[in-house]
Amino acid sequence: MENALILFLKYPEPGKVKTRIAKDIGNKSACAIYRQMAEGIIRNIVIKNQNFYDVHVFFTPKNKEDKIRDWLNIDVFYRLQEGKTLGERMFNALKQLFQLEDYKRGIIVGTDCPMIDVPLIENAFGILEKKEIVIGPSRDGGYYLLGMSNPDSKYFQWMSMYDLFMDIAWSTDKVFDQTMEKIRKNNISYHILQTLFDIDTKEDLFMYFGRVNN
Image 1 (cartoon, rainbow, N blue to C red):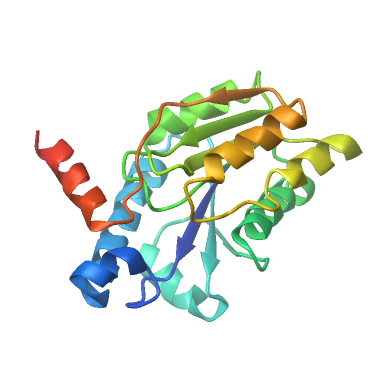
Image 2 (cartoon, one colour; image 1 turned 120 degrees about the vertical axis):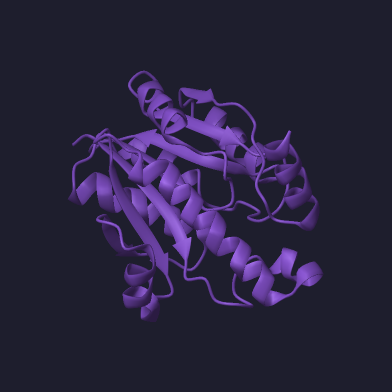
């Protein structure tokens, strides 16, 4: 297998997930929404995958691995997120699969964008056969997908890849613009996917369910 899909995931624990939504609807309800969204994305990109890519669930926290396995109950690879910042954890995940598993292409997604599905993922992997980076911007200024082709053993390419994840104002509306600035600065070939939206606030919830019901 040449393609690896990385799913970043937290154990659904009240007060630890969807904290912005929780301010309006409470920790338990926010956790239930997170759990439902994660399960929906797993159905979209894992269960419907026709052996086009391997799936690696990078989870946190460390002491919840058994509970996460029981919750998801799917045949995928389970790996612990490693790093102090989100950028470090993302870089380490890609580096691990590129260097240790020798995948040719890697894509990272999270559990905040319920519109992610198999056609979108397959299209992104296809783009990576021609481009070094593929990125899906989200409406809030972040991104819902980031993929890249394996830098192999080229030192400059590894340093350019590392730079994409450092000194980024994570969880702000600057993430996409800062990442694109680094991509262009390092002369990395790229393709931008359609803009989708994450569900992080009560307003996002209303927008999504309004769209689904129309």
